[in-house]
Image (cartoon, rainbow, N blue to C red; front, side, top):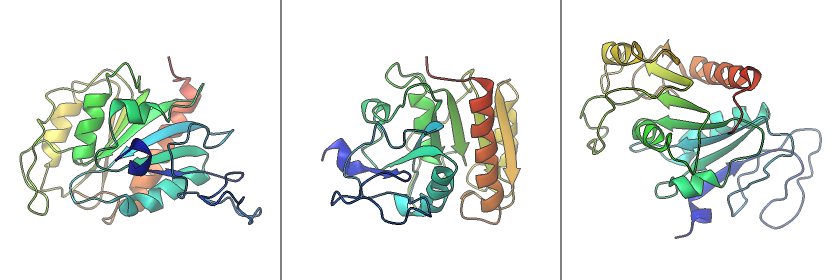
Length: 221
């Protein structure tokens, strides 16, 4: 399977769909997820590039609402399907002169941490949703990756459910104490922060973090 078939892309006005026809509704910014390839120039005015890595028992469809919200605010978003989240594949979506962010959920957050130091990516920030720190299963699927012992020195937003039983909040608080550039946002609900009671809060906090990266001048190296 090629990289192209493993990534769902979201974009804006001016893109063509898979048939090659421009979107007709010029009055409402479209969100394109039909392009059969990784898009380097998703939008000529993209404000950031965001690569979203899914976790255990999470499909790309579960993140469409967030991707659409980010796209409408000017961010180029690609949701990497399992097998399509290699450093080379994700690096293809980096856009010049805008921050590049890895956004991972559950085990996707662990992969984002692993990939953060890759020379092929040079991520400018990380967004970690429900970062798992214990070897507890999700829907019967075990954790096979090793939880981190420390966070890298870079802008990081961790969003965690107050009642998360997969990765208890006190452990996350301890982890962030040694990372001066990490921010912890606690939202209502459990492990699945984008689908529990705090999902709107989580999405809003992600937008604020991206805005801060833009205005802080965290552009690609």
